[in-house]
Image 1 (tube, rainbow, N blue to C red):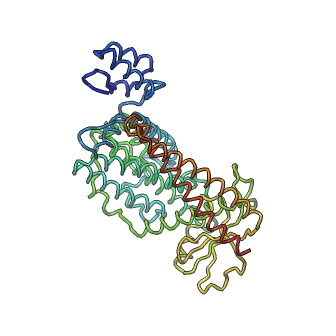
Image 2: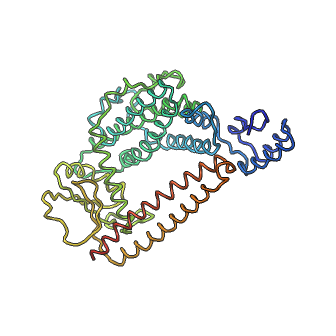
Image 3: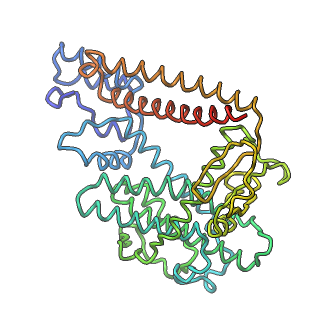
Length: 438
């Protein structure tokens, strides 16, 4: 498309949406010649068979900021704007979901703490980890803005909000925030303090996320921040004097430097790897994958985690309830420093590290053979699809005639197919080795 021909995409159409018919009508009303008009109509019908969906100004701004790592010419893909609209929806839904969890029973005029740091001793590993990650993203976003690398800033805040805050921290904190996690041997006051610190931590993460996002997505963040401000579990109503997010201070590295905790990040990364190991092992051998929660703990499978060091054993014992909640299993953490408890039978094992392994004692030859057959079919199908896509990309007219957006989708699809093939082949190699041992 060319601006001189008058057939470029209007940003207002991306913001508000437009039907294909209206796009064609606008095109015909421009200064495009008959020859160019037919070509432009053909391209437009191919690019936007259903028109342009409503994306909103925030998604468009976020997309344009993400493109600022290229040169002066930006070949914008509307589908990328759509994906960032989904991100804005994710932000909206996450905040609306979290707000009820911030409600406190304490009297607003009396017992609230004045500072999050005063709750540091009550924080769980997940609390300390997310605060450390928040400190890191504050630094990354500010450095990106200072260096005029806005793409780096938007990528950092998106990764933090989706992959770390929503996917990890909120999931880990649900039992604490809902208040239905009564641990045996733990005093009620201790559990209440954990809930209070989790609420304050979640609020700080949401508050700072809105402030960090505001230059890129001003409308949704202003709307949500008004509600987040009023839900602060630490600040009394008399201190809520900021009327707009524009009046609030932008988070800076100096505000969060004291929260950087490399030890918490390393320990949390290890716990997450154990969770991934348990889930991967259960998926690979089909131990048990219920769609609905079992009626009682006795119906859950038991996963044994063998530790070769006292330090790892202690860390996993502390995280045992988190492992059970996230994986929906009963966890048995065992210490085996000298290897004396190693099974003499051949079993599938996921090695998290040199000092931690997750064995599966279900050693049915038939199940292993069935899984091999399934993975062979999956690997063959993915490899064939990847080869077909490569042949298409190597066609003589692919680069010149296929739209750039389609080429980008093909490249993404090829990466997915190659990743799936590699993962299936890796699992096949492990299972075939195990099969030979039976």
